[in-house]
Length: 263
Image 1: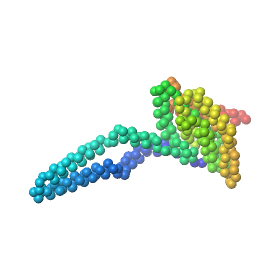
Image 2: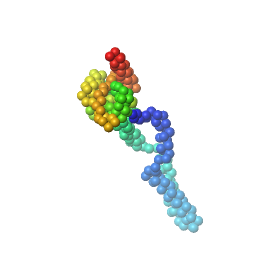
Image 3: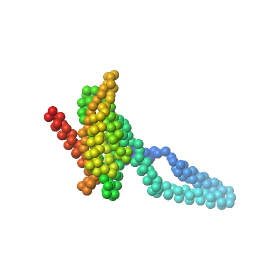
Image 4: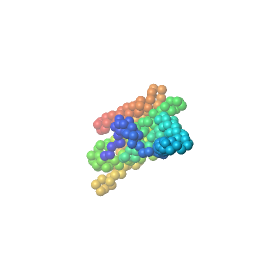
């Protein structure tokens, strides 16, 4: 079964990769302009020197000095780095980069956590609330063993479609790990998160997953374990919010396993 795209490992070496990208970047229009001015200044100096030796008027030398001064000013401006507005535009492009989970075609976990931090800070400032609902696919390992990992992938896609069909357009869905999904619910408190979980569990009972296994169509009914948490006075940051949701999910998985063993 295909795994999630691991951005954490890339993040450890992301600084060096970014620096290498800057070293080997393609020349932009501003680079070409600066290079052209420098070449013109150098050529003007050569012409001025020849003109002086030939006792021509000093206009060429003055022109060359002006070009050299223009090149020096442009080099100083270049050394100061990009303007603040340019930096903001570059950061916005990085943040909105289409990083996608290869299996479920969902945003990457790293992008999800970054946006959660932004939304949590915004909720704190405005006095609002943001919630997290996390889901674990029940029995995915059994599906992989019985029907092959291809069927397991189809189950994951099915769960992703159900979660996406129930959430609002402003909410964000991500595949959090191999068999876990997370949904960021904006302007939503704990009561609203529980209501979303109930809608998901109800939707999962109405439609099964379909998979092609050894040349025949197989119907696979599956469910999810869930846990949710919402921001509030006792939640310091986005990481703590995620931690609370994960704890509630693990508790639900443990209780489900206890019930299964009892049966």
